[in-house]
Length: 249
Ligand SMILES: O=C(CO)COP(=O)(O)O
Image (tube, rainbow, N blue to C red; front, side):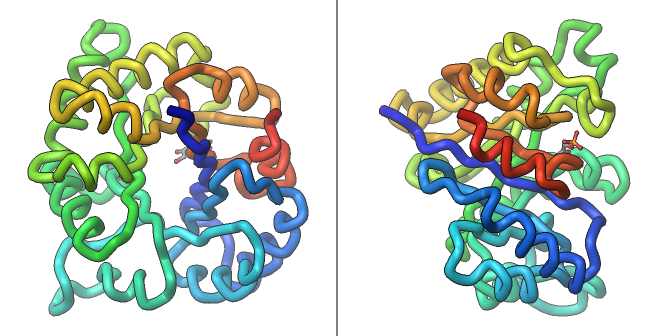
């Protein structure tokens, strides 16, 4: 079964609301490609203006994070209903920067994943190892653990619609990309883990992205791999290069 590629930008903490509108407008003609799902995951305050600017285009606007409670005394957090009311369909969960700087754990990621599904939002679930873990040869075990915890109590039907982003921490923002073989090895292992937890049909349906210094020069080789269904792109999603990544063929 052919899986539709999903290429998402993760803007991180970049672009004010007015800059976000300008960037969406600049990139709109460049990212036109109906063969690929194109998602811009933007800072919370940019979601509504970016959504407005993306109206009538193939660009979908996603969020970079979400809290796992419905509402209440959680100062500074964004609820799932706030996202759905704004029209958001995708949310990045468990990015390594959130794990490192904002104390997210596999358990809180799992709570967020369950909550996103409850609200009909597709989670883009991030996993990935440090350079030390890679050198120790435990990276596959580590990622299998991250995946197994993130998917606790997620049904097979839900899992089929999920997106997983494999982002080796040593390749994020460093300009050092995993080779396409390194990326494929882990993406295939993730698919295998999903097969063990669920079944073959779920493993075949789920989409797995690679992220970590994806650019216009390496996208085609990465996305040609059988288990890599697109990318989660940081730095290069903020410039015209993103158009070349989306139109990698
Ligand atoms: O963290 C990333 C996407 O979520 C990757 O960032 P870079 O593409 O800037 O390495």
